[in-house]
Image 1 (cartoon, one colour):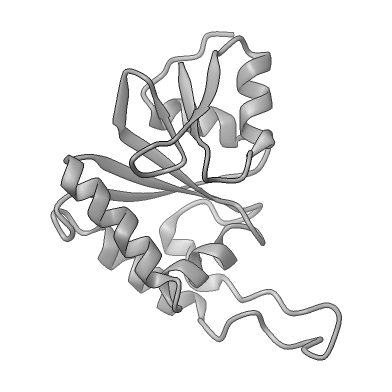
Image 2: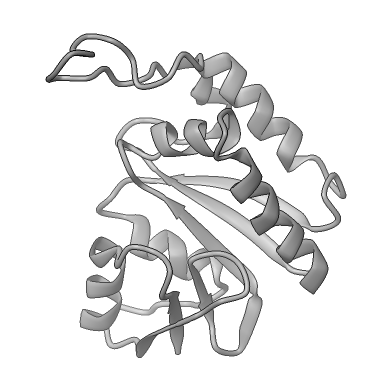
Length: 165
């Protein structure tokens, strides 16, 4: 049974393929993260997919939203868990490539042409590497990458579930 947190968006690009592949899914309140298995809720995956993932992550790590992310990590450490951030991005495949990332820009309105954030790719990459350091927060934090089409398969791998076709 694969569990999806009720406080997160529905992430149908992950849940629908899992259901179609025959996996049982349910929505419930998880202590941390967005997806876990009923057998091991301490190994959780947190999906970052808004605005190609890195935009959302930059907002979580390098803005006022940082306190919410910190609480999530503290909860993971309190439970002795493992939290993997799955960044859904069409081109970036590993943390060392994040330095190439640039913020999206507003397409409409008064801020048209201005970036959503002033955070640069190299700054975000350094923060992610720091967060990934062993025992930095009292729990294991990792960053993985996938495209929207392959995210459901990556979730299975991160949860330790083998899928046979």
